[in-house]
Image 1 (tube, rainbow, N blue to C red):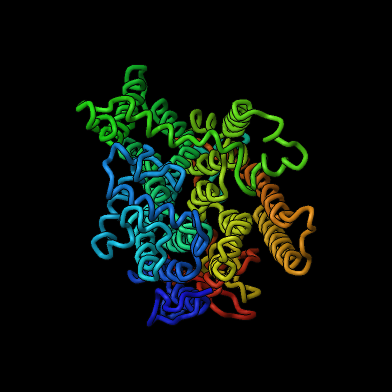
Image 2: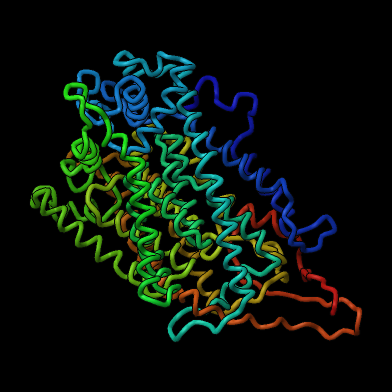
Length: 627
């Protein structure tokens, strides 16, 4: 279903043509006009990727939103619009309180203060353009085309301001850090840990800029966030963007700034708490490692604590100092407590709808909601969550490292999503986004998981009539970045243009190829089954249960893989082993040397295809001036 007047009117380019254009221009990342391998990154490449990602969001935004034409409560779109209505028309102290004009039973505000301030800002802008969109009480269910257009644009502006630049900043920072670590050399990892020889090729000077561009492309076009924020309708991009900015800051050793940024993310959406143990562990580990005395260690931790508490104080102060008109005094702790109580949905139970986590997966066999009280379920979920994230957290406290920190973000996100209390399908974004930060070091894993996440959200997306958007963005993503990053000097169309890799890497590539093929078979088979076989009358939600059960198994396996990968990352202080020099053919002084590489990469993507030369039966060479 597409709106009668598309949001991209005047730019009628089908999404796959858009993807093909992007793939074609990425050829310049590794090959110059004379056919030689280069390391330059044209200035227009990143803006092009940025523009394509915005255009893809416009495509998704043309489809239906949550609760469209579905009174009386509609859906998340109406919730966000209603919060704008409440925040601009009622006093601040009443935003989280039930009053005559603020019925908490009708999408009462239940996100932290920064979301409320964001709703106030966007509400003021929309009220200035069209007051009917956010008029008090009379605008419930307002769904004119103009209002939907403006609401959609606010989400796109949020992504442009927060998420997309944050992803680019992070990948530049992360890749440059790893490249600098490799160039500096080191003593290598301890026994049982991974050495960085395995990734030295990925972050050599020749491939560094290509890696950044590819990683940004994969992260910016991650389909799950587009479907939830621009299809279903939410503002996760703000919280996710702030979290990614915070991650970029702390790996750059701007720990205080990173702490402030993550506190802002936590105060925009409480689900960001999924990532808080990773930030805590990494910052604590760095503070203990980088300071030699007990005094300086305590001082470093206190400095970070003051930054966090100070940020909370600034954001929550308006509710503390709000004046009660009846008494003429400030609400004080009572005002803060009122807000906090709205943020903790204990009464909703262990989980909602069909979410791909352990509790929903096992519910057909163990009726958790029937057998356990809410208090007991909360304690059990807390115990399981702490147990699940403990190894990753302990690893970063003991052996802090930039790469290990990002893996820890993923593992904490998995731990909370799979085991914690009151999880939504949309919460998967808080481990999907950290996974997108690992594209440079784990391209197969990082480009496979987002597609599984979209499949896990199918029951929600189907209910929102996002069938076409779901198929379109998943296929576009798979075509663009599926199969891993392109290797300079290697061609998927050439039998001889190859790059030397270890037998272990060959084996892992084959395994990932099998995983991708199996995933495609399962996903397509499940959707075909839903089309041709109706669910039994006794179990009308059987198809949804099949989707969430398969997704839970995939997430559980991915969590185990991610934890194992983190455990093999050495602390930054250990340093990588120095890369071995490449063998060169003997030539006389002043002649050119030829380096031939072998590759076993059997993955495929439009990006990889475009970034490599088309050659059959020929050897691809890179020419260097001999010293």
